[in-house]
Length: 199
Image (cartoon, rainbow, N blue to C red):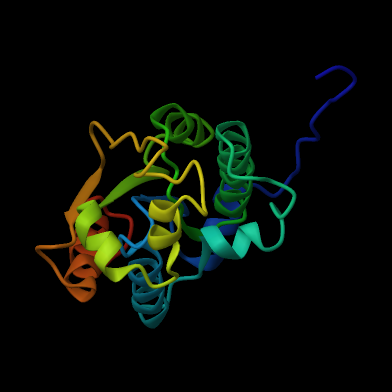
């Protein structure tokens, strides 16, 4: 962009992480609506907080209610939704926080774009893999029913595509594991990557 010169601040991500005694990174949870992303993200943040880590969770509906309230659910606005969240998530990591993002984020290209905003070992894609039949059975907000009846159009998994991650860092099939077990899987991965000390 013309006439923009980013300022180089003296205090950086490394300084902030050291002050908080943690390695900042972003966990990006992707999956269909009602797959369990928000539930798992909430339980994971609770666990990390109990272990003494400073965290923040960015969740789809919460962001749509504020920062991205001007966006529709068209493919174009979905791309912009994820672009904005990616930038915010990267800023939170720069602030030294362990950041958890829970978004459907249906397009592979958009998830790769977010990954590109962060350094190596700072972005981890977590595929919350739940069969659509189970998501529809849960349907806590009644939106699958509305999508099937035509009240909601361009709904991911019904009449708009969901591009499953080809090679996620963590793949959790939620019909095989409880949310608590999913959290343990993620925590074990983070310990193995030496991002947290214990899970």
